Length: 194
Figure 1 (cartoon, rainbow, N blue to C red):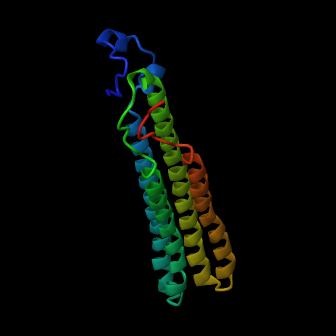
Figure 2: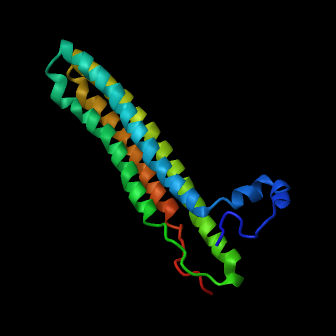
Figure 3: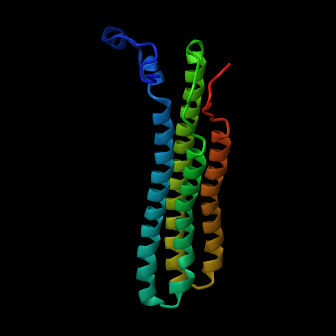
């Protein structure tokens, strides 16, 4: 089946098509894989950004107080967890994608609509998970940076700021939960038969 042109439109019909019709005929598998890529890439960017922010402050603060080296590595671990959330969601999302092996010609609209719904569902799952993990990584990085600087100056503040950092890290976990709920409705029928 030619998913990109299921109605075999001519060039003139494509030129007169609306933007909605053009978006509708983008391959559903493209939307699916693009969503997986967004979830992975933006989660990893968020984690690396957070590690960069935390790491710079941690290294600078150890000059004044070498004792904070090991206990402040918890901030780097929280940032790394954000990337792991993206990998977990990528695995869950890619498990939803199946190739449609057979379909009857009179059911082409229903098969295509089902595949398109699954593609859009996985795309928007990737967007929401990726954005939540990107923001989570930055939030954990900034909080971890503050934690390292404050711990070098006043050691009593470490546990208090760590609690704030844990709540910042929970934002990424909420994104994963929302993503699981979002992609639960995505389905590609292996055999699209009536």
